[in-house]
Length: 100
Image 1: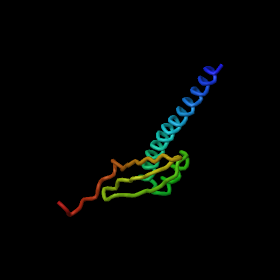
Image 2 (image 1 turned 90 degrees about the vertical axis):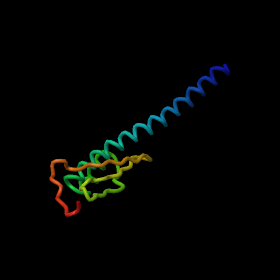
Image 3 (image 1 turned 180 degrees about the vertical axis):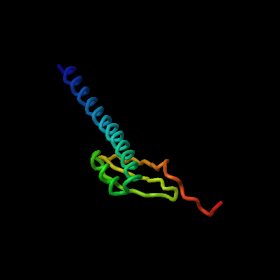
Image 4 (image 1 turned 135 degrees about the horizontal axis):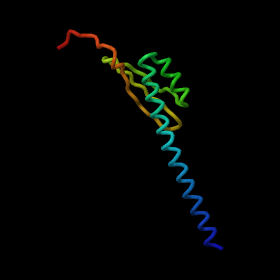
């Protein structure tokens, strides 16, 4: 009888550990997908579009920035997981500069 109880307890602990790990992996994957989509949205619609796309994917937009080469960088959060993505419009011509 004791071995049955111990087996059940061990199984319950193992399954609860798997749930925690699975949740972590799923949230990280969802966050990365939301970040990728939000970065693409930021390229064509700015931060407001990035925020909307992140929200529709269940994420919160943490930060959004544009560098000198017009690369959009966004960071999103789902649960306790963060993800970052970068995107730029490869069809747009970069403006020439006077620097060599």
